[in-house]
Every structure is written in structure tokens, then in C-alpha cells.
Amino acid sequence: MTANEPLVSHDNPTPPPGADSAAALLTQIERYTAQLIAQVRFVIERFFQDEPPHVSEKEFFASFLVHVRYVNRVLVAGLDRYAPHWAVFVPDDPAARAALLHQITQHYRFTRAMIPHMIDVLKLDDPATKDAYTALTGQPIDQVFMATRSTAAESPALPGMENFDPALIADFEQEVQWLPFKRGEIVLRQGDPGDGLYIVTSGRLEIVTAQPDGTWHKIDDVGRDEIVGEMALISGDPRSATVIAARDTEVIRLSRDAFDRLTLKYPQFMMRVVRSVITRLGQQSAARRPKAHLATIAIAPTSPDVPLDRFVEMLVAALESFGPVLRLSSESVDRFLGRDAAQTPPDSAASVRVIGWLNEQEAVHRFVIYQADPRWSGWTQRCLRQADRVLFVGLANRAPDPGEIEARLGEILPADMAPRQE
Image (cartoon, rainbow, N blue to C red; front, side, top):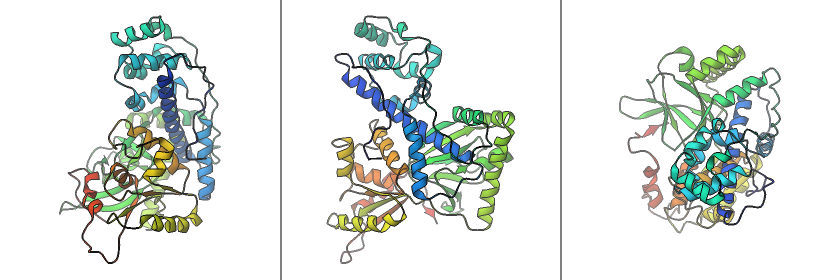
């Protein structure tokens, strides 16, 4: 996979005059939705494997890439389900919403009942949107609702899942909710009721407990494909620890109600969750839990004149013996995503596109090296938020005082986060 290879392909008709921006927006939405669907589906299938095979890093990334490429056509059901997450792409303008809706109708057919989230996101019941659509197409907006449903190929199941009912996988996928968390955000809080379980699709979580002095004591890491929150869900006891996003992280959540429905319908689902609990307890008691979650490393200078390029080149060369390595700087990201894409503010709507692209790269590389800018910037801030580990590089003949980036490191954590102990 090349760094800018599209994940969604279409046999699109030629867009009508003036619809170029709406067509580009729909392609962006479909690409982002396809990536979310591929991530969720892959993690679910890994979770349900009878015995996840011991595969090399190269084989693991290749199997993920197969899933991504099979999601080559987003169904209208998937587009609607993830509409609340791609809503940030949609301009707050009736004419723009009408143009986007018109583009959607060129590729999908649907009834009102099939797109409840899209109706909200596109404000299809807003008189201004209705008027804009009629002005654009010469037809009332109700004409877009039709009963024909599009189809798409299913991705091949992973090995080791022969004993699982395919209906269980499909039902599980429909029940889960995809959620993003920023670095430092609390996912689960100690003492809260067990209202759901979580599986990491990208990023890393830390399990910590509060200490009398107000600090956190780290207990464990939770990485990609791993589950957390299931113990309190099964026992009914309050949560025994707090779970924090150690970096910008995405998870899928299964609520207690959905958990109960699946366990009643599929007894083997409960057995899979119980096996996860036993495995976690056994690894913790034996003090041999593997720490293979280090995948993203941010390299930042302590001062602007540090020769960072040479250091990063040597680090990449050393890591390449373990698997595919990708080095990303603000210049390289701009080459792939467009001018100033790297400096997109992390909290802006346009940031969703950058995050999605970065997650694609992390999914198909063993390591991603984020090379920060010489000074504090939007890209430097993103590097620190995306990283499992941050490495500062300095000059030996300089004073050990914190540099600009070190001094501002606390800005990427919530103000109420206490220092953590490891």
C-alpha cells in the first residue's frame, strides 16, 4: 500500500456542473467511513478467533490490508451508521448540504427509515435544505427516497473463526459503538458501574489506580485488539481502576444492554469474554504480560538547532529489522494530504481527515516515527498526541533546562490530570 493509495473505489458517473466540491466531499466521507468499517470489522474478527495465530508483523499488517481493500464500496447502512462521525465534514450551509445529498443520490438508493442519522446530519427536514435541494435539482427532496438497496462484497473471514456463527459477528458489529478519545482523556473511571466493555482499534490505553497523594499508579497497558472493562461488566462490581487514553486512541464499545442481548442469543459469546478475563488474570499473576504496544514514537528536539534529521534516519534504519517503518514529518504529510495539512489544529473539523489518514498508516506499518517540527506547532502537538513514546533529542553541550517543546508538553493533557507514576 502506498501512503496515498485510496481505500474506496467507485464507478462514479460524471458529476453535474457545479458539483465538483460536493463530489469530492462525498469521496472523502466514503473513504473515512470505509476506514472505520474496516477497523471495526478487523478488530471484531481478531477478538473472536478461537486461537489467534502466531503470525509475523508482516503477516498481521497484510491481513488488515486485505480487510481494508475489501471495503471497496460503502453501503448506505454503513454511511448512515457512521454519519455522526463524518458530520464534521459537512458545511453548515443549506446549499452545500443539498449538493452533497444530490451526490449521494447518484450512488445510493434508500428509504427514510434507512438513514435516520443522515437525515439529522444533512438536516433534510430543514425547510432551508428542502428549498436548496429543489432549487438545485428542480425536484422536491422527498423524491430521493427509494427502496432499492445497494450491495457489496463481504471481506474474507480471518483463520481461527471456524467455530463462530457468522451471525454473531454480524450482530456484534451492529451493536458496537465507535468512539475516539484524545490523549489524557478518561475512558473508564475507578468506582463507576460496569456499563460496557471496550476493544481498542488503534492507539493505547493505560490502566491506573488513584493514590492517596493524588497521583496515578500504572497497572497495565491495553493495546490494539485488546479488551478492557469486561471484568466489572461480568461481576457487577464497580470498576476497580481508571482507564486513560495514553495517546489519541479509538475504541469500539459494547454497552451492557447489548452485552446481555448477545450473551442470551449466543452462549459462545460469553465463553469468549470469559476466556479473555482468564487470560488477562493469568498474565498479570505471572507477571509476564507482553508489552508489544509500542508502535508510534515521537521524536522532538530540545532546541531548534538540534540535527534531528540524521538522528531519525538512524533510528528508522535500526527499527526496519522488526518490520515496516514509516517516517512522517510535516513536509511529508503535506506532500500526501495537501499544503498545510500537517498544521491542521487537532481540535478542528478538518483534523478528522488527517487523523484518518494517520491511522491508515499506523495500521499497515510496524512503527510510525513522528518527527516533530523544530518549534511548537500544530504538527508538533499532533506528534506528541499520537505517540506511544516521546523521545527528546538534545545537544550534549547545552544546559539541561527544558526547551520550548518540553515546557509546553502539559498542554496536550487535560488540566485536571494528575502526574502519573510508572
